[in-house]
Image 1: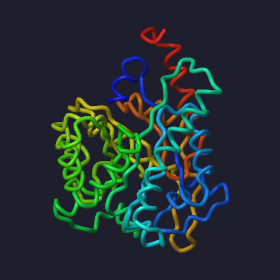
Image 2 (image 1 turned 180 degrees about the horizontal axis):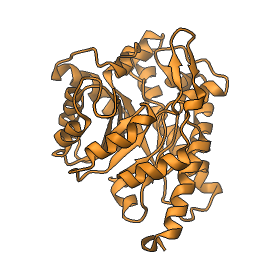
Image 3 (image 1 turned 60 degrees about the horizontal axis):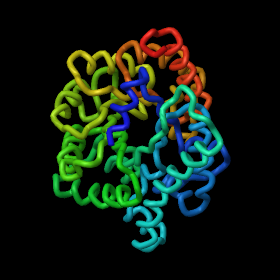
Image 4 (image 1 turned 90 degrees about the horizontal axis):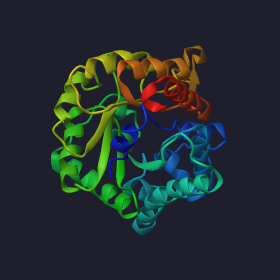
Length: 319
């Protein structure tokens, strides 16, 4: 189901959730593992569910599953069997769906759409767990990409996900490979989001606007955009892509802080973006799905939600 298309018929834009892993770290969990947040699918699934709930309470329309770095090989390398790995990957969908059910039981949906889940699938660079999602320093054949993605797609879909989020892509050829693979799953809609190298291009050097154009032909692609990138790049990237696209643009950048690899810590807190003002700017530039990535919080998503409420209150179309 194309949840995005349905929501945009009645609302000015879709509100995404924010960071999962850095929220878990903020709560005291140590995620020094190639599985990252997926590590807690085994160790503390309730912690994941609670963060999903916090984003729903903040106003998110979409909950992204804790499966970004969840691969069979990744779990096996941590000592799990293949059977256990498959079950844990699928549990990410169950947790997200349960969080929505719990939220709906306790809250009345007023002036907001029914929430949906997007099953997260990180790029091959994320699986390598060496920062390659920001460099694109790898080359695979189409067969390699198919082997990497297909089992995850099928596992997540079998668990109840009928919308997928392919995230943090540094390479256009990888995005095109995924779009070709998704032709075999015509009942599943999805988005693809890239990382940004600067205000115009992605890490492999391709212009973001050219990436968008190249993907327009794929009918089940529900949105395309940028995630896990410097918020200072976002407005320019939207402008570059929004000139001749017919597909919704999605943006969910990082907080603005910089990760310092020398101390393994986040620095330059003064660069944190004000999501209240930023979401308004990104919407005005043409973004139609807005949320946050690393180091963003439920408070940031609440600011985006409040902007949409103000927008709907002052726009006759939404009275």
